[in-house]
Image (cartoon, rainbow, N blue to C red; front, side, top):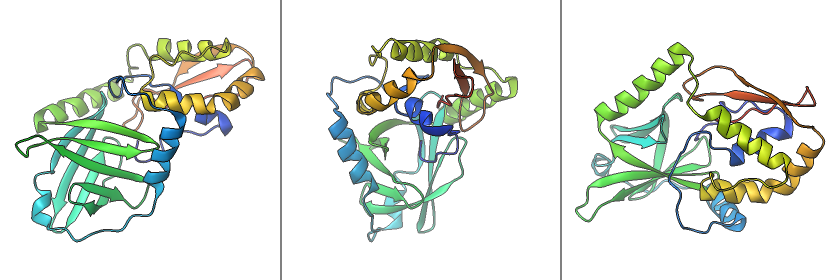
Length: 242
């Protein structure tokens, strides 16, 4: 997530798939019960003003490395003197600022990165806090990170969609058309957000008619497999995150 240019907004319908259709799995399902209220509380906390605290740059070196966010995303974290940077696949590098010994924030967006360590003090993962979600990204080797990005670049060059994306998107739209949306494939955070938005999205869908087609557009670094579904109202296009 972090930045939002990969979402082509086409009216209010852009919210529909942003909140609820993970076309490829991002994080594993958990047993946690996450309510819309909890998501709203997280979103408010993440949007709260931040203030940088004093931080010894040498203490950042244990965080520097690569972290895998979903099947096609790598967060690259590094230090340059007394400045700290993070870059997500397909996005420009951005400076992050310390708010605690193990948590850093972005100035450009309402997002933070926190780092988790094991009992021996080894940093094992980071967590992206953004949009009411908390997305873990396990630490991976430089070789593994490069392989993930190389595979994505190969798909971009071949302009090949992710397997299963059309079926997953079609299933979500058709379940919403029947008024019985399938929340099971969604992460807990996405399901909570989708439930909170359901009154509005169901009302919008009711006036648009049945799904007509789903068109594969292209593959790009910031959006691994965009697809545009068209509904019976031919002027209505949904632009999902892939």
